[in-house]
Length: 362
Image 1 (cartoon, rainbow, N blue to C red):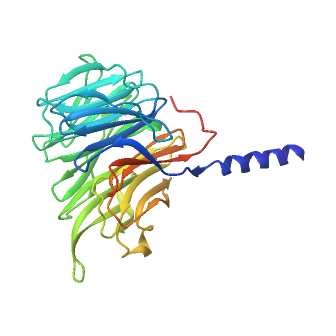
Image 2: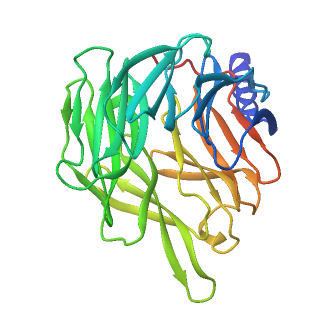
Image 3: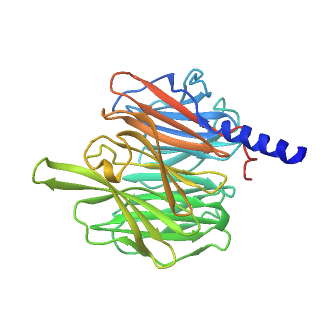
């Protein structure tokens, strides 16, 4: 009986440790026109800021304090991304009409350059998995994939084949050794999956079709579903024109839409998702209008969590003001979220703490 009581006490203690820590104001100054991204690993919160072509790296701790910014490039940078694994950080960006990539193994003190990719993309997204840097980009109106290996064995694929493909996004599903790419195709949105181990591509699948003025905002993926986000311009007879954000849960077995949620009057055009160790797909997004509360969480910065198709919401920061530079990353089952409020030039930060954490996947 004592063992049972002790077990109950331990479980209660662990549950109590699962909570959102207080909001921190960081010492990283950003403007509205900057491009800001975050990736979290054993170094802490790795943040890049692309400002007027200058690419700067910061290592920020859970108190919101960052060391001095480290300049990676001093001019000409666009489409910057950050990704990596537990012990490496990669930055990928466009400069001088080519895609460049660098990595650091010591919190940005030193950077190793990877060979350039001779492509001038209009958009770029990256993930790191299984010892490889996986890119998707749009160039010449095609959605393409490239794999940085540091050798001549790099793999390339026109993901959209011969049809139009723009604004591609990329996500990984580690348990299936797969990379997923989604992209806009005119009034349609499509996706394709790639098995990294077998080096095989699935067929092109349609996520939505014939939706005028609709554009991909982001997506997440688990064993059974794709969680698709897209925004669309709508005209309301009372309130006039505005953007709404849609969240579709799509069954992977037949690519049918199981459910759809509409966030009315949103400022979000680019959502960011992460997958935790316990395989929950979590997306950070903002919703600012009071209308439609019956079908969406409270206005502000929200976290949408999918646990094998079951959806829940948490409000990280309640506000009707438009936010900027919203991003989310995860370590183990912890969550790390950044954003900027209109009245401050410094990034805000909040952590969901699940201490003691489950060991990191390798």
